[in-house]
Length: 390
Image (tube, rainbow, N blue to C red; front, side, top):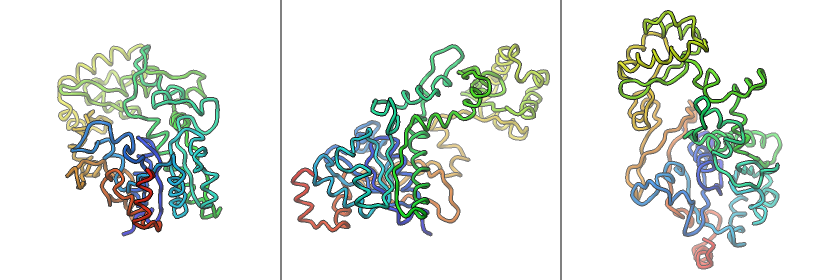
């Protein structure tokens, strides 16, 4: 059975998380992904703990279904090799600050002359233009500027880093995949590729959705503890159970009524969104939920038609029967690390399901193989290696 993106060739010139996750998802869906890495050092993420045996688990969870080629893009010969790769590719993804690839002579304008069909995706913090385009930043900065960070706080308190890197993953990696797939489809009509400008900050702004609607409609920005989805009312909150935390997501009145009756608190049904009563209801329900374990509550509510569930650690999620059934955690065999853990593929396609065809590559593992496919013989490769290009 063919993979959805079988035959599509991707060049990954990114480092760290957003680009790595983007291209891994394309690889999971069948694309042939070649990861370009700095000779000797590779992607910075290879040095970050924790480690399996010798390889960083940060690298291992972001780079399966890829081949690794070492290439020094600070040399003209290295850029020549990249241009030759682009000649046979469909997509190139990079994550440098605006203008870096242009200065090296391998920006979109240059590469589109080599291959007019190339789809060039640039993932940056703030985008290719605008007042902040050349500023450095990380996920927390993008979240703050986009207006999202203030949502992650208790009422009146300083916001906390969300934990999950929303800008990197939601604003960067996933938006890039959507843009790339759209450009692939458009290429059938246009007959040529195009440039994709992905700003992680833009992506976070897009994710504001319901909270932006609050601002648009009421003229007031919601903050932590000041919105129904941000812990303002007892119907949508986390509560301490005897052995951890339980989640209650009973936004709809009928779910809230079912919860109240199940807990023998019918008097709360009419007080779902009472500002005055919320503190007392929170206190009472907290005391109730402490009387049983998460598993006991989950089993108790299973037949009550309410939105309740346990709040897990990652280890607990890995052992949950539903998560296991959906195969969202798996293992693969690695040539040096042995059996390694991997995340599953969240995109379930009935006719062209994704697959894990390659374990995460060792640094430069496929350099000779990829260059041979481009027509470089052994002697040419050794010459480039001696010159510090590979």
